[in-house]
Image 1 (cartoon, rainbow, N blue to C red):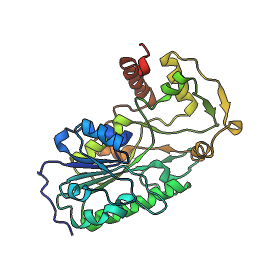
Image 2: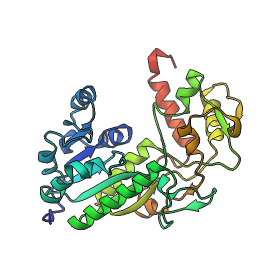
Image 3: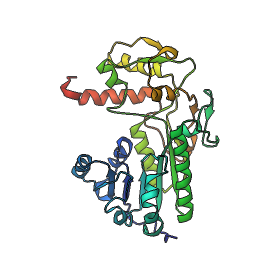
Length: 305
């Protein structure tokens, strides 16, 4: 078993999978706190290095060069890599490093999905709701959650599992499709989705990591809403033409896009609030207003305000 570290030691973060959400989290940290972050590409590694974040290449196919040494100095680990048919790639390639050679580790944060709850016909679910994933990717997530829980138990370390709802934020909001003329308002009666602004993912991670809080947390907003209403609101506040409604039953969708509508639930977030975190963007209205404000402050591709 790894020797328990002292709580007062300086924080040193390592992130597996420095994508949109994990990158937003690292921007809340000072560079001196960041031991490393992984990416699949050399080009992205150069971008991480320019931000002062030590990059490591890792694609899950083999242990990443230098990662074991970085994990030996890590106090707070954030995992934001999707599992596959053969399990979680981090545990597969670096699980033994964490078990045997991570003496400073004192908290693990694992980013999962509310998809593990499956379909509930629009009813409310919370962390006490038994998982019943319907899609293959959600079943793999649940297995990964359980594998990380087993590791945390073996190490006697706190593990926070953050189950994320639909992620949006600057550069990943309805405004991009509205601007490009590709936004659609699909209507499936009774269908709702929860969402979460990327800054609230970063904030929740920072909050839970600061106190080494353990548990399962639904990281989601307060208002499940029909997707067509969200697009309409974005069009209204952004000054775009509102796309016409399209019947979901006859819409031309990829199998992946259609599969998202196969699950319908309202996800509660009281565990996160009881842990002391207050959402910056409690509904899509506040979140879209923030996205629009940032878009206008930094117009994409030279578009004027």
